[in-house]
Length: 201
Image (tube, rainbow, N blue to C red; front, top):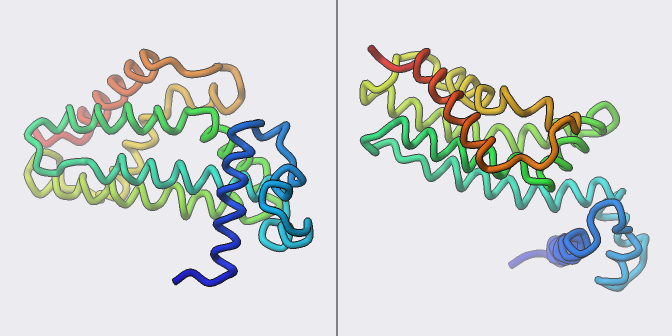
């Protein structure tokens, strides 16, 4: 059974999720969220010291779970390795380049020198997915599909290649909402490069 403290925290996160969805990050305020849950502003700030922290928790929880589900769906026994990687890459980038996920990444970068948000984003957002992908690649290495190398490094290379064409442009606002066809083309090129370097001859 959840403690009262954890139950209250989840209540706040639920209310914040609704407010952010309705108003967006910029227009939403801590007062809006406090009105939704009742109680004092001091109680709200006791759980989450700022709107940025609260938004970060809401979005990281949602996107982190979604990305882990995508990575966990990689089938190490499937016959067509390339198709598995293409499917993963398209779903992976679709989530990463959603407006909410981009907002979280920008927030994490902006706050990384002033708080633990950057580290938490990496530990809770990047590392679990990296591990899932590394486990998948290690199994494909054992099957003989890929060269035997450090699977963790291979996973980092794969994830970096997938983002190589779009990341800077999206984060810096040079590129607006990313179209599905743009993602599909970028993923195809990234997987071709990855397999060129890692496929067992």
